[in-house]
Length: 270
Image (cartoon, rainbow, N blue to C red):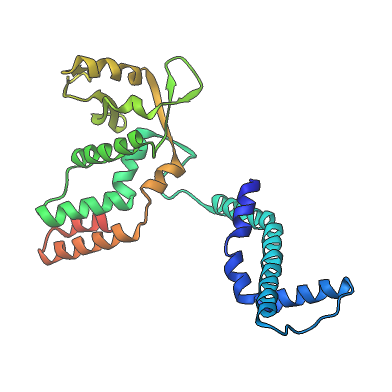
């Protein structure tokens, strides 16, 4: 922290001292010399003029440096207060609680995030038909798990029979994929399958084609609950995003020009 303060104080000190050296520097030098009892004389030679200018510049740099150094704690406090105020005033757009189940978060993401509405509009405008929900969930799952593997989205899991949640290392997801299957209670249920191909029986049993991937995937299957930080999730896939919203509106205009189903156009519009 001390070195951060020094870095901040030194930043721009030289340029500001050079710009203002004739004013505060000369005043400081004059006051110091007067207090020490010296008589102030105008420089008579060019060597004395250069020396006086350098002395004024050094004095100006010193006072600016010390001033910025003393201001640094107050500046850091103001920044911390602004960050805290933004965090407290920030509210969730489409997720309800501080922590959300991963499957539920993805389900809401495809319906209400700017990314989900943009992708739906793009598919409608280019193919002429709305994207199937299972296809959109599959694409969204691939997008989400890439963020998990990259470390941009943290997932916590609860082991069977336990209460506490633990952070799952991002490397544990490299052999796994997220998949949604129909569920009579929740409409869609997220399951974890091994990469390299797998079959899902009508009973919901996953049969892996790659034994190594299945073994690595088994650890993730020991969790009976997977949660994410809702704020972190919505930060990655916000409800409103100007670039995505702009592209979505462009695709919807193209869909209207093609006279496609107005009901389908309205879905990604809202």
